[in-house]
Image (tube, rainbow, N blue to C red; front, side, top):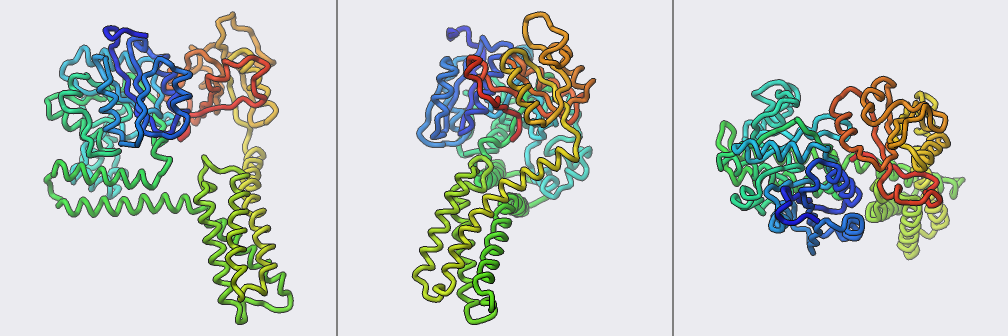
Length: 536
């Protein structure tokens, strides 16, 4: 444990329900330069899960501050800052992975430049592309209009209309900006305390813009430094409730505009109207995206009922006689019950979907519906048909969710050549991973990147050993690799970040074995090695 005088950097992470991301973020910190002069403070915004137990067990030296309710990002950061002992503060999102130079570059920059008050690095998306929010202008009326209207996307190189994300600027050029991303903000602790930390009127979003504004008001520069990079899996915490997150974002924009009362050629009411329109379109697109599976369910539910009713009454069509009204009512009731139960139980969520969840949700919906129509006399003639329908619906709704993805995956394997895979690792874990790839036939292993300290052999498990981690970029480029699987406990985050940032290897997917697996004995290794990735 570092003594207080040895701590140069206090890293404050506000966490909310992303323990798997938090673990990777902390691992990457410990692999960074100056990590031995840093302390990590995690402020948990009432996640209500086992995040605390997982983190404390694996990282007992981390300071964990448990909050009883979700008080928002800015307020939680302020609480963390009150416990900080370092000369500098790094405000870091839990869904980030930093490179080995991230701490040292930031520290050296502010040590050498007293005029810089706040620094942010080059931030990459999981696919290696630039995350636009890492360099921004304040959303003045003109900037906001150009962004909301789409003109900034049509003319990304225009200094007049593309200031929102500064797309006209070379992403590898360091310089002063109006604002940087809140996912990585490095500043002096004295300055943070002097300006009063984050303004707590912002629950989530825009608090980083506001902090940048007040730092610039103090006469300091906000600096973008691409000499070091991080990966930010944007929106992992907010994806727990995407619609609520989008509403919070636009509320924050309104608060920011109200606070600073920008003047310009566009009246304030016009800007607020634009924000409302953009919010409606954005939230509407999210609802449409989430409704795709529900629309498919509605089609199958009503098709199955229709066919069962026709089969039950072979000699006549009940949809053309006096029973059509109660039948339409039954269709409507059945649809509402199934969709509501599925939505409530998380069947439409990728994170919560399971076959068993779908089955029990269907069973509950079926029993609820049959209980409702049991007491309706007008439905007596078709209760048997509806009973068969609910059984059929359960099978169909489970079936399309399992069969269609498998068919798509199989067609891809037939139509598309196998992925070219390189595995970085050595030892029992990498051996098991090689066997997984071979048995699943999901790709062709090109070769191995050796990560052991022992002399590099010419081949490993029948595959050529192509080089070491230091040769990774050249190897992946030379063999046009599509997937890199990392099976080593050795430091590798910085290699992957530099690789993605270099853009020398295109369309590369990086997956890795989580650190816990390497602590298991050979006989306790799982048959299928679980893999993590940078995906959102």
